[in-house]
Image (cartoon, rainbow, N blue to C red; front, side, top):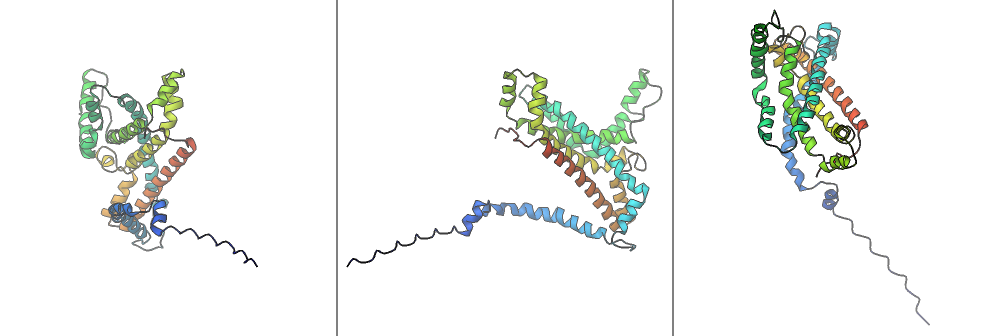
Amino acid sequence: MMAPAQAPAPAPEEARPALRHRLAERGVDRTLILLAPGAVFLLLLFCYPFLYGLQLSFQPRDGGGALANYREFFSDPYLRETIGITLQLAVPVALVNCLAAVPVAFRTRGAFRGRRLITTLLVMPITLGTVLTAQGLLGYLGPNGWLNKALLGVGIIDTPLDLVHNYWGVFASLVITGFPFSYLLTLSYLTGIDPSLEQAAATLGANRRQRFRHVMLPLLAPGLAITFCLSFVLAFAVFPSAQLVGDPRGSTHVISIEAYQAAFQKFDYSLGSAIAMVMAAVMMAVVVLVLAWRSMLYRGSSGGKG
């Protein structure tokens, strides 16, 4: 008799990858240790102070409940109006910086003689700081400044122009100190766009305006949104300029001044923290709106060289 055929042996199960390999497939490996110093720095210098200030804002000095500081801020028209005043400064400044940076970045993105010198001059205001910038504005735009003296000397005006210690003095200071950041960011985005895209459009007959409108602007728009957000945050946190070349009790009564006075003049650190949290909430709201608009405006690739 023939022996019954034996059933085939089951195929061995595939060995499951080790945990280290599975984590590596998800981008988790030993190189993440390099992020540790940055993470510690972020926790110590941002996360902890923010969370400490947040919990301190719910501990009013004079009692009245956890939301007493916020009720005091929003119920006082003089305090509440600082949000609108600061927005009226920060939003136009951010728009001017972004719009002015685009043509300048376009003109300086290519190689030409004197490019380094021009770029250095454009970013030099970064090295001055707000105090030196304010001092220069007072000397140039003040009632006895060079500009008013020149205009009076040639008879264009009869009385000095009121250009400082008001809204326009702070506006000029914020544009001078904020433009270099907007310019450098815009220039970096422009140089990251593949120039062959613009050349292809020119080959197909598009003129300079059409190339900018239909090729460059859609690719540059996401970067401009980020540039606007950063410029807005810098301008919204204005403090020295509002004091030195503005009217801190009037047209430039910005929210940062009230936070400083509450914390370091009235020594009400809880109220100062609450005002700082309101500042953070307003900035976050504007940034979220701009980024939401950015995501709806353009979803494609950036056309970068790399």
